[in-house]
Image 1: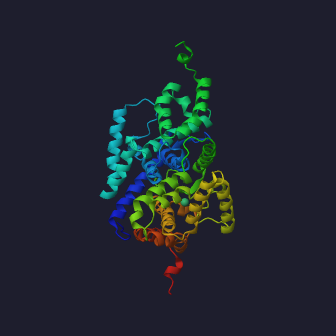
Image 2 (image 1 turned 90 degrees about the horizontal axis):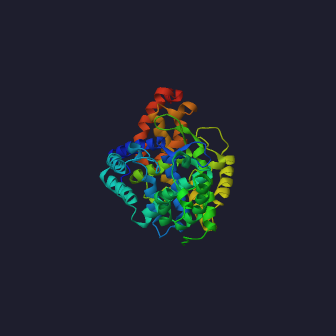
Image 3 (image 1 turned 90 degrees about the vertical axis):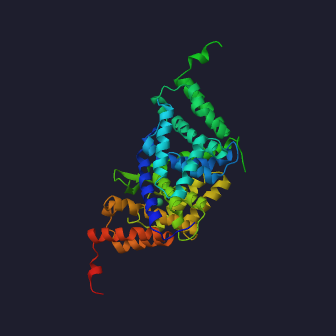
Amino acid sequence: RRNPIAMEPLAARLRFVMEADRLKSVIRGTTLCDGSRRENSAEHSWHIMLWAWTLEEHSAAPVRLDLVLQMLLLHDLVEIDAGDNPIHGDFDAAAVEAQEQAAAARLFGMLPAHQRIALRAIWETFEASQTPDAIFAKAVDRAQPLICNLETDGGSWHDYPVRRAQLQTRVGDKVKRGAPALWAALAPRIDAWFAAHRPDPEADAPA
Amino acid sequence: RRNPIAMEPLAARLRFVMEADRLKSVIRGTTLCDGSRRENSAEHSWHIMLWAWTLEEHSAAPVRLDLVLQMLLLHDLVEIDAGDNPIHGDFDAAAVEAQEQAAAARLFGMLPAHQRIALRAIWETFEASQTPDAIFAKAVDRAQPLICNLETDGGSWHDYPVRRAQLQTRVGDKVKRGAPALWAALAPRIDAWFAAHRPDPEADAPA
Ligand SMILES: [Ca+2]
């Protein structure tokens, strides 16, 4: 389906990409790797696409790289309406989910029907975390803040009273599931940071 | 080629993506569409990937979308070393080219050999502007600042004494070549802005 001259679908698409510009103003809990400022969701999305591309070989299962990249390109777009909800923040998961579904309907709804359907399906597939592509894409998305935090002496971990065991269920298990080698590389450094900064009293208690 | 457990290529890849984080601190001449601040090259790269995806149907020739997205993901990475050179700024094209080639050698050189070769080839193909994929990718890259400038009452055009005819050769011809419908949609608005703000004396002179 090609249409190099028509005006109307083009105008709708331009309104969509102009609206998408607002993702550059959604500020995340994590900082740049040099700690100089907090990052926004648009540059974050670019960065983890590069991560996924270069780390593809370490996926737990073979992936379709083109779909992984498309998932990551779109994955945070709903934050334009729903905002960024830091993984260790306090939030109502059902309310966030409803906000994100409404955002997806509004934003993808700006596109011509065939694109609205295609892009939303890719986003839903990412959210569902069932395919190898989505599992790997989620692993990369969760791993990037870990590394930035390790590089900035704890980074956003200082802002949340997260404990090592919580980090495992919220983040570690998902990274390990999609990219086991990446998790194996990060886990010892994460263990060391938490042992030094936030020792778990139960870990020292007799079993 | 899959390697879900090896440590060494993974470590090299992590150094590469951490280095790539610096693209978030390369500031462009253009602003966000709301004019609130200048944009950086990482978020710009994310944005034009979304542009290319949604506008693919308007490419002058059929493209391989996966390659277009990969080109745009990588296209500005060399700016980490070479900086952003605004299209209407004063610069020595040969010197910039040499800086960008050195940057490509250093940055892609951080990756394992097969990825170094593959990623650099994709970047070189974009730079060469010969394939339909590269021609369309370049058109989208050039078009995005036009729209942001139109949305912000001239935007970065106020910072450079660019004239309408110069804009045509530096930008317009490339947008038209890769995405003729996009150019057709923008040209009347660009004509109107330049007629109002920077009328060309020669345009009024008798031929
Ligand atoms: Ca660019």
